Image (tube, rainbow, N blue to C red):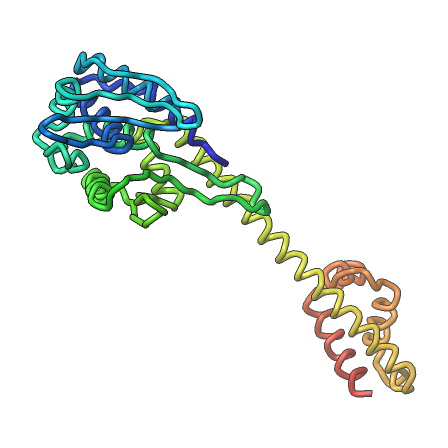
Length: 303
C-alpha cells in the first residue's frame, strides 16, 4: 500500500516554528531537486520536479526566507521548475548554506538540533521520498514495509544516514539507478522515521497493519496446525479400520478379548470420530482407548 501522498500531506501540516528549521527544510529541497553551477563568477540555480508539491513549497519558502526574484513554471512533459540566477541565486545559497560550501549543501554536520534535523528530513522526503506498508491480507503479494529518500550523490546520502543515526534512527544506503537510496524496511524502523517526519496518522496506520498481519499470521498458523492434526487423525482412523478388517479376514479377530472386540466394533461404526470423540462415546479415557487402538493396529498390520 503506497502511503507516500498521505505522508506528504501530513508533512505540509507540520509546523516548523523557527526560521532555522525552515532553512533546513529549504536546504533539503535545494539539495535533492536542484542543480547548482557557478560560471564566470555568476551562480545559477534550477529546482525541478515532476511533482508540483515540492516546487510550490520551495517557492513559498524562498519568498518567505529570502525574498529573491525567481521564475516559477512548468514545461510540457518536464514537470515543474524554479529558476534563479546571479544575485538572486546567491541570496538563496546564502540562506540555506549555514556555513556549508555552496556545492556541499548535503553536509549535515552543522545540524545540531533534532527539530532542524526533522525539518531537513521532511524536505528530503517531500523532494523525492516514498513510503509503503504491506496489505493487511498476508496472502496478497505486496511491497513490504519500506520508506526511502533519494539523493543524487553518495556523500549526501551518507550524510543523511549519519543525521538519522544521530537522532537514533536506523537506515541504509543502496545505489538505485542514477540515485542513492536511503531506506528502512522493518515495521519498527519505518514507524520511527514516519514519527520523526511528523506523519502521525501514517505511524498509526503502519502499527495497525503490523498488528493485523501478525494476528492474521497467527490465525493461519493455527489453522494450518489444526488441518495437519485433522489429516493425521484421518490417516490413523484409516489404518485402524484396515487393521480391523485384516483381523476379521484372517480369523484372528475371534481371538481378541471382549474389550478389544468392543473397540473394533465401535471404530467400524464411528469412522469419522476423532480419538477424543470416540473415547467419550465409549465412556473411557482417551489414553485407554488409544492404548487399545494401538494394540489392534499392531496386530492387524502384521496379518
